[in-house]
Amino acid sequence: MLLRQRFDTGRPARTATTSREGRAVSAAATAVWGRTEQQDFRARVRGALLGAALGDALGAAVDPLPYEEIRETHGPDGLTDLVPVHGRRGAVTAATQLTLFTVDGLIRAQVRRDTGAWHPPTDVHRAYLRWAATQRDWGPDERRKDNGWLAQEEWLYARRAAPRASLLGLGDDTMGTLEAPKNPTARDGGALARSAPFGLLVGWEPQLVCQLALECAAQTHGHPTAFLAAGACAVIVHGLARGETLEAAVRRALALVAVHPGHQQVTEGLTAALAAVREGVPGPGRVGAFHTPGDDTDDGDGPAGGSHAGADLAAAVYAALVSEDMRHGLRLAVNHDGASTVTGAVTGALLGALHGETALPPAWLCELEGRPTVLALADDFALETTQGPALHGPTAAAPGWLARYPRA
Image (cartoon, rainbow, N blue to C red; front, side, top):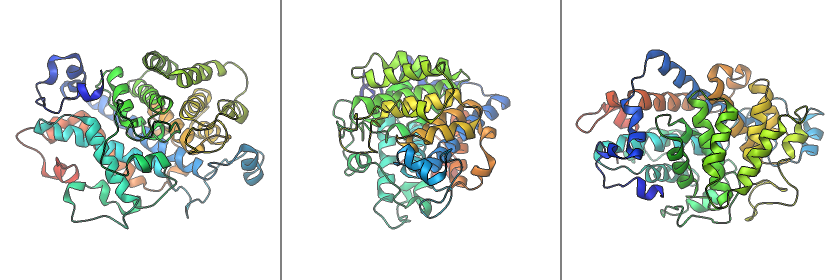
């Protein structure tokens, strides 16, 4: 069943709990969150979003260079620290921009639910269209009060290596779906890199998290490898945010993705990543092995070689599995022949969701572009998840919250 059917926009917001899907969606609102649980969840949300941004910023300097060129430029150990890119150290790319708008769309979906409208893919798509406006406008349009606060952040109005499929898929108002996806040959990691926030919906069942990630990935990337990699990543983050081990979360993702046609590049990559942990000392060669030479993306997007979303996810999972700490994992994730921003962002999200924000390298964190915005959005998401009913409802809402996340 497609999300288009599960999220019926005509259903009343608070009467959808008679179905299994409705119970899963409403669980977060009805669960009792103690102080310790709230603090742990907020730390994981911060860790996932900040970690993804750090991995993106680290990888941006070497994407799409082959590993030998990375070594020639940065030394025999490859890239080991943030270096200037896009005019500064710690600059992020479109991967982080779209991740932030994904979070914005998920919060807006919960707020709009008070009106009886309940179709999260549509709200995420609207958020992506707000991101698309940042790629063509000079700056925020302050006349658009329905944009909310994120679209008013001037630093986001910068073109930072956005995947072609993302720009084309959001070039008009038509929303791609699993039945009619945008860019059906695009299998690069653009959708994968923005998929971690779906996994932070800890009150949802894993299969529904997966379906939402698939539907939203298909809005720009229509190849099964691309949208199934995004779904698998969301399920893995979901498991980590709930306190599972990384290996257990990967195996759950394998089971959920394997039922979909065209899953082979994703499931084979994840299976190989689990097996590679026991095959020797971690290094760039093992990370790069997931990108098969000569198996390039169908649409010409992304770096040369075998970089597709399935390979990118496998490389990121492997780097996270064998990492000694966040810094070690991110260095492994970006020093290879593949899409370094994608693997860096996904590895950072996985390790951040697993260990929380205190595991992030402070020397890198203090230089991260947009850090206040990422932190504010992470805390807003945690607030919405744990205390949403205290912020808004069908009959009353906090004015400040609606100013940040309008129902329109």
